[in-house]
Length: 225
Ligand code: CTP
Ligand code: CA
Image (cartoon, rainbow, N blue to C red; front, side, top):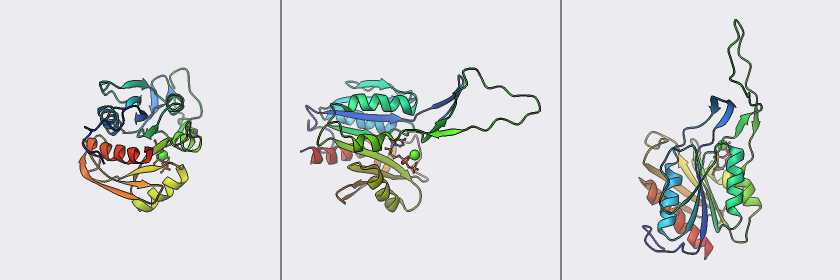
């Protein structure tokens, strides 16, 4: 298997990577968001480009500079991310969902800023479910043999939760991170286990996000062949 991102083993392939975290607006100045930095997704985009792929990076609220040689599409909310991923996935060989997609969004958007009212408790925020993009691209593959990869951060029973999630989502590979002390959002490093729908388990030791990215592409290339 190719390692280190030097072999052009993704030449002629189109891959889609989502990165960052969605923001779900409440009003023109406020949103519900998450702490995803986008660094793992950007590392996936850079390493895929280095291996010869045409890369579409669907980027949600990262503030990171565009990687060279990568098509960057911006998406703010989960609904926008879904549109951008489905469009790019139509002719893709692989789709990697590294973005943290908000599970819920506010049921209503206030077109004007929400104001305090004297002596009154705030109105509760009502949430509705967002579409599950990973489950959707896995169920309706845009082309036969398309490889779909998800990410999951788990705290307890990491592997058991990961296995159940892999089955529920219907993807081919699930990169499972244990969320803990060293493994914080925004860090340059990561440690993970990549679960395969074929029952395989590939541990990736604590190290740079590029190394995890290259292991993901090794596993994708193995499934594309
Ligand atoms: N994901 C997605 N659309 C959503 C939620 C999640 O595409 N609405 C994708 C993420 O990009 C990630 C994978 O699904 O690749 C797993 O996300 P995770 O939040 O771990 O899964 P959930 O099914 O939302 O489970 P949980 O209830 O544990 O949050
Ligand atoms: Ca979730």
